[in-house]
Length: 109
Image (cartoon, rainbow, N blue to C red; front, side, top):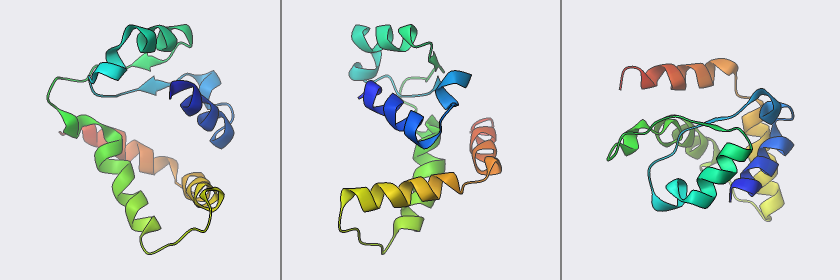
């Protein structure tokens, strides 16, 4: 999954991986497994600490997926490529402030 994620990030946002990746995920077994931790360390991805039993602290859960769901609501896609194209278009058009607000709102949670 992580190699696929890195490839997708490279395709969607060239240069992002060169600037460094900061990742926050929960403490599920696949995320804390030795193989996963070795991969993250090898590629230099920084992991933000995630308190146990705090799923509400994942920024994607409360900031990214809600607006994405509203954007895609009512749309139908004939192919996976069409869906990916729409997702890329949506991500490309997000303003930097969208992410800033999401990250800053973590401070008040």
